[in-house]
Length: 367
Image 1 (cartoon, rainbow, N blue to C red):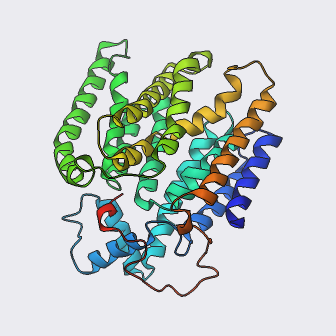
Image 2: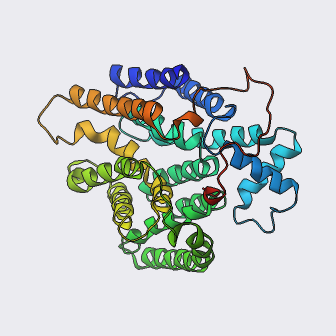
Image 3: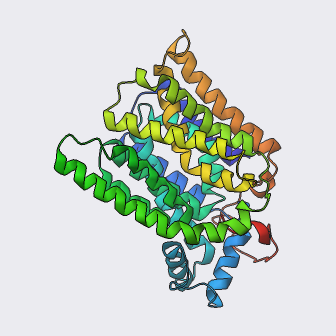
């Protein structure tokens, strides 16, 4: 467990010493390099490790090709890695580069970058980035898109959302964040352009969702596929979402920024409400991952919300302690934590024996 706590301790220490300081150039590079090596060069770490090896087996057998896959960019990354002889390690490394670049960029655009980074490590970095590889890339691209959308850049957000969809198809749902911006323009031409853009997005969602729901309904929606700990993981997005909806107006946010985080907050609460409609908690568990940026953002602004009359430093310490507890509980009591312990890296583990039954569960194959 030492490597996990080492990574956490560095970010936590820095967030307590100078919580409002931005990443200096050399700090951003060190964070990026450390996480890329930590995530991208892991060896047999993560609950879906063997599932991704099976994906490459299917690509080798011709069962998955660029012409029949629903996630062509992820398949392309696999083909490139396999063609260069790097196998799953090349996929992990490329995915880690995309995810880490996005994470550093996102944190740098929050009021307290080190605090946001600290909060990201226990779940987003350790569990998601090191477990759900293709979904972590999609979330990374979405995080970049959210920053751009908070600055009113709708087209760029749309582009990044489509790129995310080509890695993980369920991420298409994040395009719904565009809808609150439709009537925002005062000028008629600006409003018309946004309406056209949203109509286009709505058409894509409608035409694509039929195939998407068809694929997932048999696996998740019509079956009671459980995900242990789903209520705890959902609390990581629903509680920050509720906090923002109640206290968000106290912040000095731009109109675009407030609209964005209000939308993400509503999405996170909608995921919780869906637990009472959809029989499969596993489906909700996966869809809620796209709301994780609200955890990082609210953590970085929590000391400014004045929820309770206390010292800002105490609130900062509280956020760090919360992140510490999340990581401690998951590593020590998580149902699937054994897939992450011990941590191994290809730098110290050269041989890579393939076991097709390692962690494999056919019913939970897709993430």
